[in-house]
Image (tube, rainbow, N blue to C red):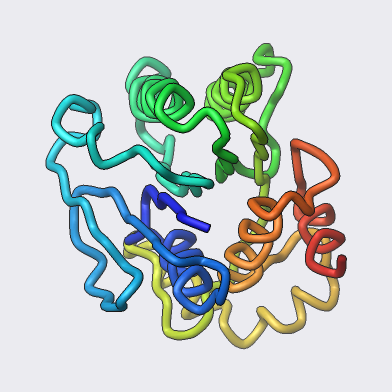
Length: 222
């Protein structure tokens, strides 16, 4: 399996990259982002581009893949709906449209979030935009398209968030995380579990197209 990974330097993307590099059936992982991952491996190839919207600059590197793991994302805090839509909906769908044209048999897996609003009519701005993005991806014609909606994500294996506030939060909550996982198993998932679940979906093991944390756990148990 040849995998394309967007957002490999983020917290979720780091976890997904780790599991892809460890997976015996993944022969190539190509990361696409604004900065290098700092990782090394015989099956790792990196594409660093300053502007992800400029697809003409790197679209020749996007063909021949079986799966895309799309882990790019920004916080909506302090952003207008227009700005958040530009970075979330417009960028994701622009890349998705290019990928489905170049790789019609591709499976596309998108990291969304718990609380996403598929109706596109709710009060929460970020949830509306995420829902609109999910709906567009599901209509694009990929061989398979899966929307992952994790709740609290716990970093493992030395992985850290790029956001300082999140790093502080995880450091403060670290002693409580095992308790939270036991108390709320359908709300908490690790970066390792995210990577493993994405690989299972890419292998055709997911039974539904929109997966909440509980569904991810069911998928992992399968």
